[in-house]
Length: 355
Image (cartoon, rainbow, N blue to C red; front, side, top):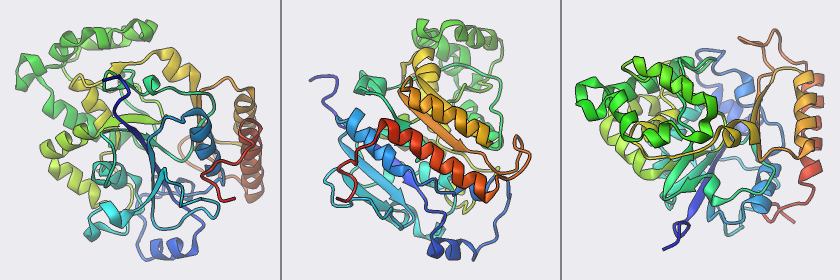
């Protein structure tokens, strides 16, 4: 059996924040925590077609794409393509918790999607493939490829959620579970993965943080993430209460857990293959678009063709790092400028688009 005998699927989540029916449904419920659930969390940049173009051109080996949606669909999407399955929330989420306007319940229930392969890659709709990618960029020896680099704490709006993830990791992998499941025991057992040469000087962070008995955090990068369904199933067996609480969370809340719980679980259980810092942070880039100036810089970088993947996070709303909301004119210009940049690399319609 070859390394790539098992299929690798993709899961993409998407919401059309302009859909009147969706907006009417959302308006029936009070929205808590405005910063976590601002309009920028749902805003459509009208560039999803370039994600599909990149997958078709640069990842032709992908087995199947599961497109997860509230129910609306892009007008251009070819739903008859034999490589795509439309998955509505009601198809895999517990109906008592619907409707949901929070990506966290969706992310933590992916393993319930009918027909999803054991190995899958989760794409947010703001991540774009811009160069050829191989299976080995995501899975090797049947394991997700990822960079396990220790950190103090995650910053930003989702910091409380990441802290909840870490609490569950330390509950299940800590000094009370026997020496083999202490942080030091875990790292000692898989030291070649935690001190991989590809991490470069980042290894020093993990080394320095070994003095702390618990996992204090991991370096995150907002890029498509490889997962094993068996990890999801294991975490659900071990921590059903926390996952059910998040499943019932209609809007994003500080009490949630998110997809990083499964990423961290793969680290703590040794179920990963080490990536390199060059791949994770230099060949693939994540930017927060906080201003038109940020947009211009990102567009130029996309047009350079120097990146395997590029992720564009909409941060053009007043918040912790942004002084004011973008004006309608600024947003309209920014959306068009990013589309122009993506089109320069991916000008041809894919088979995922209607003729």
